[in-house]
Image (tube, rainbow, N blue to C red; front, side, top):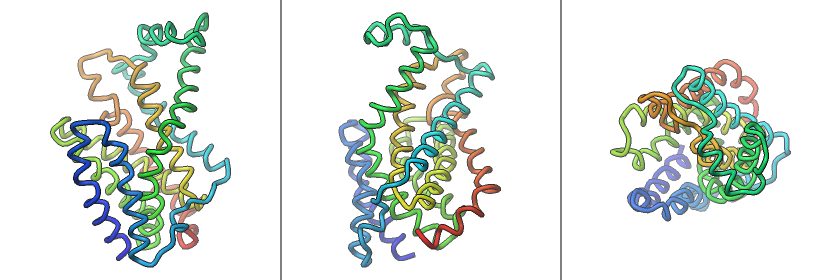
Amino acid sequence: MRRITVFLILTALLSTPFWWLSRHSGFYTAILMWCPGIAAMLTLRLTGGKLGELGWRGAKLRWVAIGAAVTAGYWVLGYGAACMLGFAGFPDMAKLTTISQGDLLFTGHSTPLAVLIVAGYAASAGVINGIGRALGEELGWRGLLVPAACSRFGFFPGAVFVGVIWAVWHWPLLYGEIPFIGIANFTLMVIGTSMPFAWLRLRSDSVWPSTVMHALHNALRSGLFAPLTFSTVPTSSLWLGETGYALAGAGALLIIGFAFLGTRNVTAQVSDA
């Protein structure tokens, strides 16, 4: 528990100035994202740990593939539900045409193939571009906090605990910017996605699968679903984005799924992490 306490205190202290700065300039967001990672390394230094405990070692490709599939899955599930319920549409042909005209790769392709090209770009170049920032958070949340919390509380309570901390860490960036329901939706989404993140950290004994998941999540948000999803009704904004009902619902399903299906398979791994 001492390691968890030290880590949380250091993360809060390091993050505080960058929470404020990031609200005024996106330049500081990358620094903010590395505050948990730096806090994790300092915590190990102060508590007699070793940097290798953060899960730097490589992971088998299957764990990365599972993480990528889960990430794409909850985005498709959430946004697919929003589209089927009539709150959103996909793809936005006007924006897809604009992207196509700016890239020769799209010239002459059908709409489905053009969408696949956009998705492929987000899943490749977008992930490569974002993996360095994602690693900063993952070294803290999954590298240090998940093994410590799950060892103390068990897998499911530990994963929920990390998800709550991860969500609360984002609140200073959201407070005053979006309605309370948006913050609640975001929190539920983060707790839900924290389940597979934690599961992969413990099963793979590596921080890299969750790092790729984190980078892919951000890439799909900014490179595919945000630009190509359009609103169909005035309340569409309540459904879309990381603060919408769509991903909150997907997060709730992840929580339920891991509560009933995932705990037994992961508990045995906690003591090994």
